[in-house]
Every structure is written in C-alpha cells, then in structure tokens.
View 1 (tube, rainbow, N blue to C red):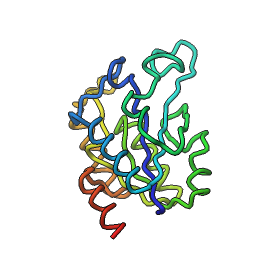
View 2: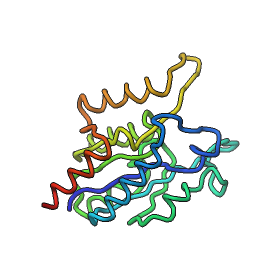
View 3: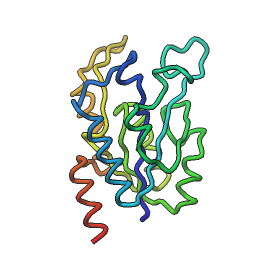
View 4: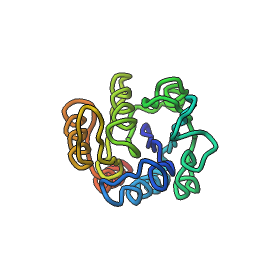
Length: 186
C-alpha cells in the first residue's frame, strides 16, 4: 500500500489546554476511527506532535500536560512519531525521508488545526508531489479573533476545506475514506 495516515497534533492542548477545538464536534472520534481503519488496512500511521521551544511559550511546551498526545491517540498503534516545531510537518523533520523510504505516494490528513498545521502540511505534501486526502470531519479548529478580525470555527473550517478541494487535496469525510480503503483492498 502506498498511502499513509498523518495524525497531526492531536495533543491535550486542544482538549484540556488553552486552545480547545470546538468544530466539528466529535472530531476526536473520527480521528480515532481513521487510525483504527488505517491500522486494520495495514496502512502506516504517522503521529506528528508539535513542540514549541520558544522562550516563554504558553502552549505545546515539551514535557507539559498540554504537549502530551491525547490519551486515546497515545495508546493506539502507530509506525512512527515525528516531532515538529513549525506548522508544516515536512519542515525540519524526517517526514519526507520516512515517506520515501516506505514508498508512500499518498498521504491522508487528520488532526488539528484545520487552518494551520493540517492545511500547511497538505500544501507541503502537494508541493512535494504527493496525492493528498483531507478528512473533513477528522480535522478541526476553533473560533479565532486577532487584530485582523474574527472568524467562527465553522466558517474557518469550511473555508479551508473549500480551498483544499480547489487544488491541493481530495476532501472527504472519514466514512468515505474508510470505504475507499475497502475498495482498494478488493
């Protein structure tokens, strides 16, 4: 099989920390379903964890509870754990080398946050020549307000999905993706 599931930043910071993911509701359930389906299909599962090593960082600080993987992700089988320090999972990591070594040509994106690390990683994968699937209900975000304005979580999530589908990824829900795995094995 030439596909791998990338499970990006499913860390406690998004559940019990300062950045609680609110949309889509239940995205952790679909992320776990995707992990279980990939494992059952003998597809590599790559877990990616964000580490913020900046002085005075308030989130994703290595060794803190928020930095830890979600307990359900932590206990599920995965083939490799990759640490990253920037939004793109390819930047400054061994992800691409691992994918090439295992002859992976397609990556499926699940995790957090839709508009940040998931979007950046999907675009990087596309730019590196990979086929990309983006799981609409196994990615998630929260409402954002900053000096540029405000956006509701649902709007932000939908905007990224629409943009991904335009060029970078095949956007699908987890059930559709799992069904495609069954078709692939037939």
